[in-house]
Image (tube, rainbow, N blue to C red; front, side, top):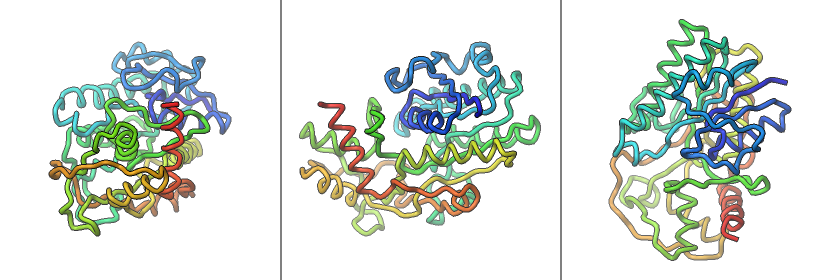
Length: 322
């Protein structure tokens, strides 16, 4: 099978995708500086602690590599508005360093971890891939810029890439001991679970959106299904497929309060919460049109029913606190 380099492979989605790649028989090398990832999520024999912006340090690990899956990035939208330079330096600068190393080592295939944040506040929902870029945060801008760079590298360097635009990644693989361990945590489901445990109310930002209950609607995709999308994208490139961009979501949305109610049903406990004003940049509804991914790569979400997502997250959360 192929030799795959995974950047940011000690993080949430990267570590689970690494397990899926290994299960498919691929040889995997993980690069991570552990600034946001966790050593315990990655088999030690696979992990190389490397700063992605050090191009010379990255190059040797690309020897014999057939393709790269590039996760390494900072992902907190709120933090990006407070420290935009950090996000541009890490997310764009780190990517440029990686691409330079790949060019020098002759590696011509890349799967890129992108985001629905490239769309900003879309005019049309569900969102198709041909919707215009309109990022409203430095995080979204950083991913948009890297996608634009990949378009140029495809044209002038022959670097074929697949950009996967995630919607709301969530859930866990408790059977592998892997799930969300962000600090600080910004994702809804683990925040709801933490509120149950601590008794400290979680904030619900805005209840006056034009949705069924006034709270934001989002498309929640199980991290296992997301990992499968990366494997499918990789297979596409290994078979000679052209560069492409795909949304990764279920095509259906749930409100914040609907998620909260499912968390209460699964855990049998009430979630303490308070209502807060809307956050800047939060769109009322973000739902993927994932038709292109399904048709082109034959991908289907298999674990992304909301109750399954919450059950997996709750099992992982309990084990982590046990």
